[in-house]
Length: 205
Image (cartoon, rainbow, N blue to C red; front, side):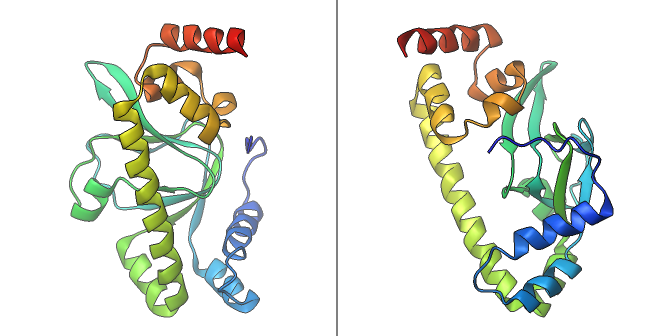
């Protein structure tokens, strides 16, 4: 899905996006979806806005409805991208969020984005009020963790070109949405190496 939120997010847009997301779950009645959407907290972030800085204690978790977030660390003055979060993905800096310790990462929006925002207390209140939501969240987290494990395994055992090919197959939208230097960092290579890989693949296709 190639998506960029070019218009300025408004309160109406945010509400509509929350309801659109909640309504996709078959286990919820239309009335339950409306009620949950009315209670969920969502925010719009402009391109380039920082959600979490290194050293912050992360008190919020995020779920992307529209847009793209980028997580990165700074090593010897260089930014190293560790993840991109796009539509229907949770962006949670778990080590900081769960233990309330200082974050070692940054989290920024690289597109105008609309995200659901939660805190531990708000999550508990929502799960008590809407038990079905707890089951939906659990299933989504299990799926996310499985994908993270598969991604890490593939990254360790694959070559840079295989990583790029995997990205082409599984997250092709990032190629249009993400600057090349950030994409190269995500793949663990230099922008020059990424450029050579792309040229080789184009020639062989």
